[in-house]
Length: 236
Ligand SMILES: C[S@@+](CC[C@H](N)C(=O)[O-])C[C@H]1O[C@@H](n2cnc3c(N)ncnc32)[C@H](O)[C@@H]1O
Image (cartoon, rainbow, N blue to C red; front, side, top):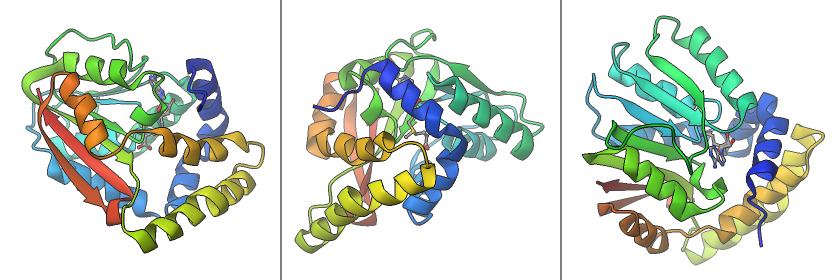
């Protein structure tokens, strides 16, 4: 059983925060940027209406959304790890200095400090898997989304093609933890945790079921990179 208690997960991300972006790009062979931008292209977002990116980490998806919608649109990135948020805020100042409507706030995705029906879209990229109780995270994301709005989950999934599954498992379970540990220097558990948490997390129809239970409908699933990652989008 993977330990996803809030303290453990927060501590783990606090430790890797300074190297998180570098590790992401190296370990995914830079494909992580492509996954987020493809997800963004798929969503139908309207300038002027607020968007929330939960488990925003170092803020890449929130900042891409803001850039697409323009500086008048309110975009909030929330996360419960202050060290990750600090990097997101610095990045915002460096990359989008005039975007004052972008905010990074400390919040647990299981208890979002926003009113019901606030955002045109609520997103989470590579974050829901880490939330202690998936159903509670999804239900909070749905609560703060406007009726008719979109809830989007971008997450690792398990490739089904036989040959690919073997290559993927070898990379994810043996190579990635070793390379991760070396690059992160002092932290082994984060890169052991990654394959374990992906293995234990529902993917495909199993996650779609949880999204429906949270009150979403018309769940669309878009497989990326042969199903290594899937984008799930539901409508409230
Ligand atoms: C793998 S990172 C993903 C960051 C970013 N979304 C991305 O695409 O790179 C997962 C993030 O989820 C955050 N997180 C995990 N559980 C959380 C929770 N219950 N509430 C808020 N943030 C959480 C962690 O602090 C971490 O920043």
